[in-house]
Length: 299
Image (cartoon, rainbow, N blue to C red; front, top):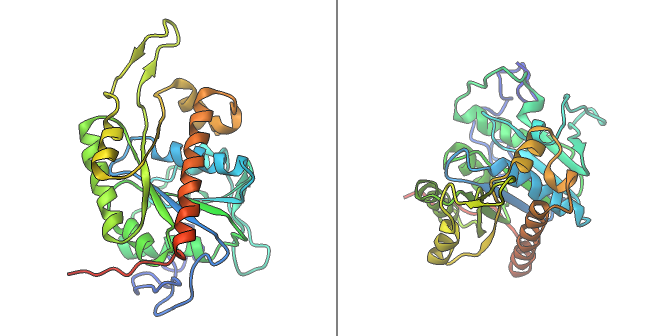
């Protein structure tokens, strides 16, 4: 089915399984995203920690500060960005060669969810996923961007390695909940980026606490402060915490993220403060060296 720009030609396009180079084609040295100033991966070690919600609100917070922002849903198997961004339909081509990303709330968006039906599973092996991901980057008319925020899938598998090898990531942000089991997986994700020489900007503690709307009693359902302690132990920055709150869930499910729909709320301001810290890290990284795809050494 229509699961990539070359849908109908073998599932994932002509490059599937051929070992794409930095430009997404076999042996290609053509760089990806030359018109993009920075690429920020939002990652987690496990699912269910609110990574996509964080990526969406981070992208909107950056856009609200006047930056040109794109949002790439790299979770091929479980795309959720279309719903969270309140966007549907299929990308069209204005030049007959590349697809134009969809846009909402001032952010350009691309997701596999735009190319398949909601209920259709994507049953692909690694090389097909790799090809589809590169096509969503290479064959999109992203234009000039200050930042491309990439919502990564959970874990440390094919997509993470493809992004690290073939895309000039400026840095990564790790999202975790406070409990030990989530932090253990977050640590693996963080160490993966370190192994492939991608800077880790810091950790965000999501679902940090719950404030009862009726009695104003604070409950630390998943514990509290674990991500901050983990950041201190690993020598990286703690970027901030986000509570477990119905407003965040409802606005995300409704396609009107809280940074856009309730910009003056404490939660939106928390995301904005995190975005400011992330952008400071981006500028420091770009000032110290040009963002280049790392060389992976497998021993």
